[in-house]
Length: 264
Image (cartoon, one colour):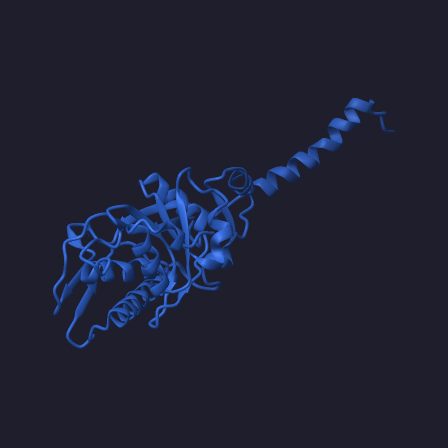
């Protein structure tokens, strides 16, 4: 014989498996990575007591201003990201929820991914050197460029490395600084022939740049829309597609020729 449940009792009984389901979903790891603004570094300066850009075989100049490469920090490839983390990431403007496979190569261990990112950074540095020396007409056989930046991987600092080399060797081409004394930040891959490529996470990188005092941000042209979505107040976006274009834009900005500076 079964006793009859009251309506409140029946509803309470039905709610038990629903609550349990949400508890399981909330605790289960999800295939996402949560990213946030990371560190920035002035490539014209030093890192851990060592100059980031060192050049021999050609005269270099003392620089003013800053060229800050930007990063994001993401949960690791083996980190557990649960439903609560994802919801929080969706609600906060200083977070981004990304498919894990869009951040890290799938099927790779943490060590393999670390080696992959280190390899990409080295390739980016080589391409930045080739692009900068090529733009300036310098012979890579006589000009030696060494790039050092600890604890950063991936190719997205390529554009800023190339601009730093140009500034140290040639400045604005007329005796002044390529930066015009400003704090300039940016992001973008670079190829040996000077093409700038998209990187992802740019809205988080503009926030990192603004936090660290930058007022100008160089962004791959294809990512103008994303860069403007959470742009810090007073920050100027400059879209670039080539190293030559980036240098031209900064020289025009330094001369006050704002109508010659592209915008998003």
